[in-house]
Image (cartoon, rainbow, N blue to C red):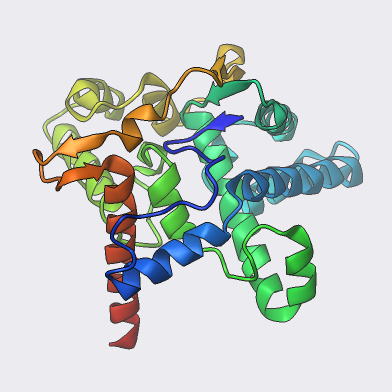
Length: 278
């Protein structure tokens, strides 16, 4: 199973305060409709099938393959050719279908999953509006449209692979973090550093992973970077999310990190709704 920032196998999540606050209850009702395992699978499988069709139809014509990659893989298009992307997608799907291990991804994998999820959710949400019966057959969101921005905020550990690219949303916290990193890079470059020197010098300050640095430098993915790192599902990698906090660091006493995340998600979603009314 692919390891994200939170447990994608969790069913029927609950928040201890949701019965007190209608907006939180509405947000949690939406979360309970989502089957994250199936959403991810369909996103990866659709991307793989469309890429496979392109490879077969193009008969080795590189230009047609590149055009497909430009359309479908906005972030990862500079990192790999069609054959390498196909290998990555197969690895991700195989790992996702494995039930005995968690597989940790690097920046290349995260960016590819992001691309696949974005394209699939656009496709799925259009299906919900135009062909709801077909959408229901996928059994992934209980008839609701999927909020891609909310999903990325909850399940990606960061969007460092998105630094320097225009974000379609300005939701906190990833947009704020990426803006800070980008401004720090620009400042270093203006002082005479190369982009690579700037990223290397900021790596520790912002806890940027090596794979993200290489991704942001536009380097092609290497053979060693194709591999996913695994640990047994018996390893409680998400246990810290459900441990009650002691009220320090901005948390409420007895609140868990998962509670905080859902609370923040509600706040941001309501904020976006308010903006749309203005």
